[in-house]
Length: 518
Ligand code: KIV
Ligand code: ZN
Image (tube, rainbow, N blue to C red):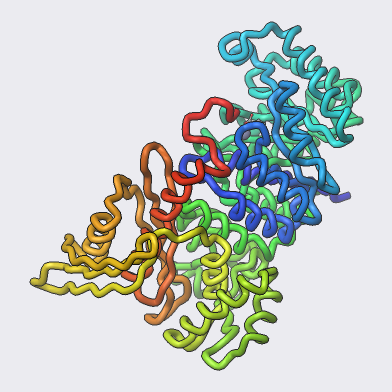
C-alpha cells in the first residue's frame, strides 16, 4: 500500500532565514499562492511574533490563500503563541507550531533551563495553543543531539497535552540516514501514545544529507516532511522539496510512499522563489537546475534518441520543464492577454492588468513573439512593484574597443528630472556609477546576475542584483530586451526598495542577526 506523506513547506519561514532571502508581504503572498497550486499540505508562512511584517504576511496568507493549512511558528512562550493565534485566527485551516530544545547543549547554554522545566514549558505551551485551535505541532529542537529517553518523555507529554504533529528536527544537520531512521523507529516503539500524532521530520543540510535523512525517516514511518523550494534555508539550507517529492514519486516502488504534489508546478515554484529571493539555483542542482535534464555525452544522446528511458528516470515535463511555448504575439489583444494570464494562474486586479498589458504591448513591439516566461516576468514586475522614488526616463550607453564606456542617464528623482553623464570599466559599470552618483547612494553592490528569459538574440534579459546598505539587503530585478537597460532597471529597483524601507521602517524581515529567529 502507498502511504501519503504530508509536505510541510517552510520556504517562507526557515527559507527566509537564508542570508539575503528576505521577502516582503506581497512577495510572500505570491509564493504562498504558487505553493497552493503546487498542492503542499501545510505552508509555514512565518513567525508571527518576530516582526510586524511577518505577522501581516501570515494574516494575509491565512485569509487569502485557499487549500493548504497555514501555520505560524511560535517559541514556547505565551506571548509568541498568542501572537501566532492573532495572525492565524481568520483562516479556515490553521496550525500553531511551537518549539523548545531538548538537547542538553541547548538547554544548558542557550535556554538555561533544566530538563524538567523544559518539559513543563513545552506541555504548557501546547495546552495554550490547544485553547485556540485543534491543529498543534510541537518540535523538540536539536532532537538529533538529545538523549533519546528524554526525547521520548517530552514527545509523550506533548501528545498527551494535545499535539497532533510531533516534528523531529535535525537542527544542525548532524545526523546520518541510518541513524535518523533508527531514531524515528525508536520514537514509534518507545512513545506509547505516538499513534495519536503524525511524526514529522525537519532536516538541515550542513553535511549535504538533508534529503537522504528525510527519505530515511519516511522509510522508518514518518508521515510529514518539512522542506523548502530549492532547498533554501538557514546556513546550508533545508531539505529541498523538489528532491523529496520526486524521490518519492520516482521510487514509489521502493518507498511505498507518495505525496499529493502537482509536480508539473515545481519548475514554476523554483523560478518564482529564485526570482524573489535573488538566490540563483546552481546549474547542476537535481530536478530544477538548468542542466538537470541536459544530456551532453554522445552516447547518452544516442540512447535517448532510441528510447527516452535509456538515460531519463524522470521526464522534464513531469516537473514542469517544457519547451518554451509561444503564447502571444504583437497583435494579441487585451482579452487574449487576460485569458492567457488566467490560464497561467494569475489573478490581477483591473489596475494591475492594465499596467501589465501596457508592458506587454511595449515588449511585443520589441520582441514580436512572447513565451510564458516573458509573461511571468511582466507579471513579476507588476506585482512586486513598490513606490518608485527613482525612475529611469532615458539612457544612452556607448562602449566599444578602444572607447571609454560612457553612460548618459536621465532619471526622475522625487518627481524632478535630472540628467548626468559618467564613465566606467564597462557599459554596466558606467551606467551604475552614473546612477549611484545621481542618487548619492551609500549602498554597495554585492551580486549582479544576468539570465536570458527565453532563447534567441531577441530574448529578454533578466538581471538580478543584491544591494546592501547599513546591514539591509535589497534584491532588485529588471527585465528588458536590452541587457544594459535591464541592468539599470534592476539596480533602480533595489535602490527604490532601500529608500522605501528607510522611509517606512522595514516590512516583513528582521534585520540580519536578530536573535529572535530560531
Ligand atoms: O531547525 C529547526 O530546529 C527549526 C525548528 C524551529 C523546527 O527550524
Ligand atoms: Zn530549521
